[in-house]
Image 1 (cartoon, helix red, strand yellow):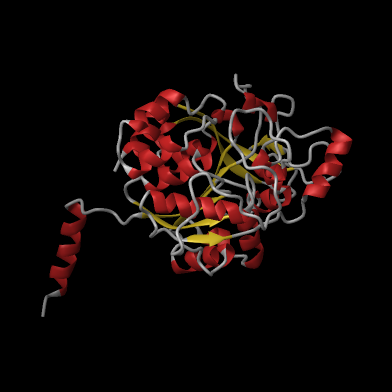
Image 2 (tube, one colour; image 1 turned 135 degrees about the vertical axis):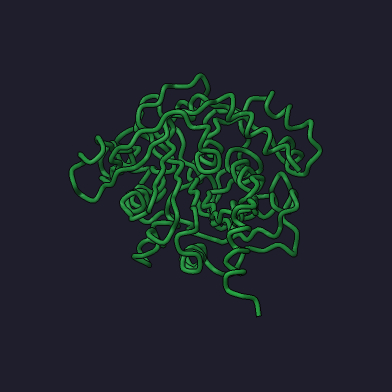
Length: 364
């Protein structure tokens, strides 16, 4: 029989010897349109970060419909050799918003620059998109369809989110990179869901971005509070922002206008022969690094150089010109209608951030 003091001593020795810490448990919630681009590259940054355990990827509609987003994600995982990662099907439609409602809004307030899966005529941004189609259609994929042995998990995204946080209370970080419909549904089904997480990092919202010198600035140049993820499902964004997350970090459009996945970055990645590097360079398209920067805010917070705490909410007045806009007040000085203080990222060290992305996406 080993004396109790020996067990305690062994534990102390193990801690002092610097044994590896348990991996960080992360769920990525993403409107994972592909191939390549900011959506899939952000997923790869999480997969390529040491010390991370990806519990699963929950997929909703947004940039594309949920079914095609799932297919792009399964195929990406197949091509980079990570079919161990579980993918869960989430919401196809927003809580209340719809294509018809958006078109009625446009008839009153003018056309939106970008409408994601509802877009029938794509803005001239130099990127390739499939023609408009209904949600049940998965168009032919440029990267090829996922193999016959690959399938989405039968459990729904919402059930998976609830189960994972019940099994790992206080341990799960959620990186939300698309519309917030899945998270809003989970919050409404389980009052304790948000509080059971470790933290939530959201790519969404817009405050006062400096217009970038690229076509994507058309989204916010004349509507500085407008951002697509919140505009697709404003009610979901409001529910999520008002929920009891132990830590809530928002990465809005503002810091991303200083970023762009330039050809020279893809060229650096192409020097690697790893499956991830081959995937990224095969489907390279230049976008602002929206989702990549949100991933960095979670995984490499030292790259963030400016943060601010403020009360944040979302305009859900469906008939108003500001439907989906980001609302904000000084910390603790909102109207007291349920809004909460949020940590907002406003700037990053762009050169170091680019190097971090290139390193991660080039690694074995």
